[in-house]
Image (cartoon, rainbow, N blue to C red; front, side, top):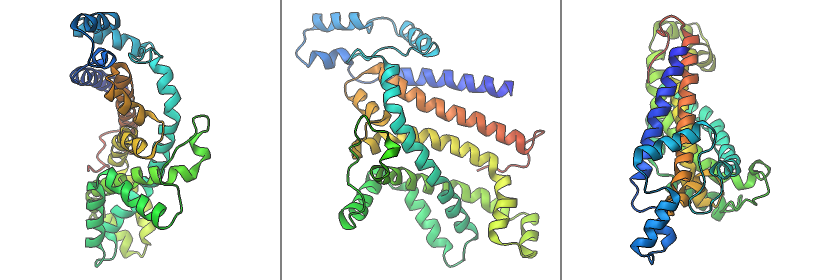
Length: 313
């Protein structure tokens, strides 16, 4: 456990360095945006000095990291508001989207992966092709197709999700249908494409064949013999998917008009609000690392000695 915590801390530190360097490499900065292209070089220099943007990079990184560790990631360079408050205000919408999308994607992912490996032989190529296509489709294409079908053609849900700022997202499920499906469907395809190899490996083992010869239904074979064997790699996959969902809401929230972390990130990138960008990106990285730590715990439970009972993706 101690080794896992040390590894998680090292991953978070490495992620913080990468996030900081990438955001610093963005062209322009908040001073350029606030200057509106009309500020003189002297005025831009004063703006950068006022925001501390003229300090050496290592000092700015250490200041930012210290603030993150103490729960104070700084203030927005554009609005002056606390970044922690901005993230806390937007987080419920994004977390609602991510949690509901994950809850939908996981069973769909398992069903598709199982059907691609153990479904009727005549249907396996079609399921596999659907899985690969679903994983490859951009979110914009999925969103457009869902809007055309569920909103324009059938009129079941509104085409945009203009959620009132004072209303929790979970209280308006009709506004979440399109964003959640846009997140969940490609995620299920991506996860199924990775899991089908692990399922194929497990189902080829003698004890699974023996269970099938004894007449156990497919569902019982999956629950009793296959899922325990793929629990560890599936947990690691879910960790990556969860972090991807938090980051992936940027496109969905922008498309459907939801005021969440993704929309906040897109806006912050546009105006070069570096502290906000760093906070949202670090949160997504933290979700992945926390998930990987939980996945390691699952692997130890499956086999506390060597982890040999698990299969890899």
